[in-house]
Length: 139
Image 1: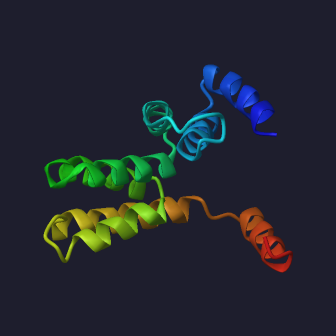
Image 2: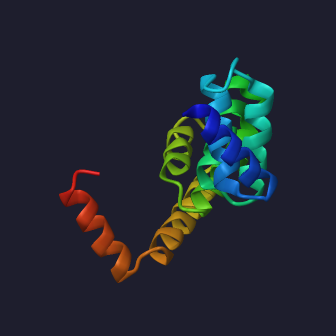
């Protein structure tokens, strides 16, 4: 039930939950709670990104990229932050921007190092066990 989920996510977002903000942005993007609302989508993405949600950074980068080349520097900043938080999509966006000249070699190298550090920081024996179980269960 989207309506019930929307109510709970709205309350959680009001309490500062960044995942709730991100999920609300998805609901507004898809029009799962009425009409699609780009303004509310961006608001919730910004709140999630400020709180450290990596996928929100990627999405904001894609929005900036879609606006046009004059906003490419803002897109790259979002993707750099996302890569620093361990977001693979952000890193991929930066890799794609390098051959076109929008991403400098030193920036890509810094993003690669930060991404790897973030990924390494998330490793633990418990996570590896959970990943193996999820793989076996086809999640």
